[in-house]
Amino acid sequence: MDKKRICPVERAGGLDSSLRKLFQNPQKILSPYINEGITVLDMGCGPGFFSIEIARLLNNSGKVISADLQDGMLEKVKEKIKGTEFEKRIELHKCEDERIGITEKVEFILCFYMVHEVPDQDKLFLELKSILKPGGKIYIIEPKFHVSKKSFDTMINKLDSIGFEIIDKPKIFFSRTVLLNIRN
Image 1 (tube, rainbow, N blue to C red):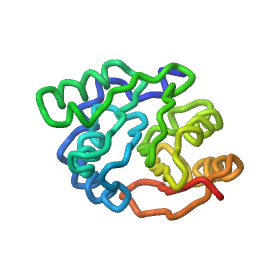
Image 2: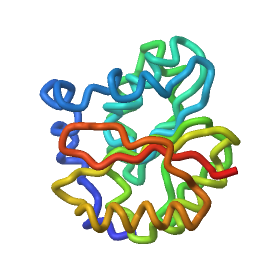
Image 3: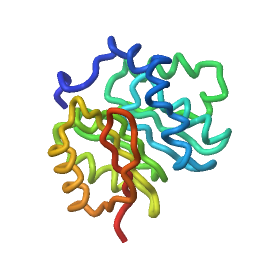
């Protein structure tokens, strides 16, 4: 993994601000897709901006797997949930350089502003497909300021060739989005 491509831990504060919540409100973005009792993978979780809100949406049931490549980001999540009820609901997972390394099946995968940081997207998508339960969904949100429409469309074509189909393209401020499931 090219470490220069990923958001450094030193910038985690910007990923976790109240200002961000105004434009990218996790409850608003995710509540249509998170049901009680499911297992959710927050891929590239960073400091846990979405992980904690997903755990809230699960309402004391189910589980969030907060996965990141950087120990520092996982430490930030660990510190935030320490001593709270979320400690039981959020499982921290350190990804390997070239693979996620999760075998547990999940119903929902969130990839928020992280796919563009992955050099081998085909490999990522195949691994995500292997852990997605039948009927599960993957929600990819990418920043317009980093990802052109052309490269986003190329990514969607890769997903299509791997066996995913588009369910929706929800609107999120300054973002390109796609919600998918595995084609039957």
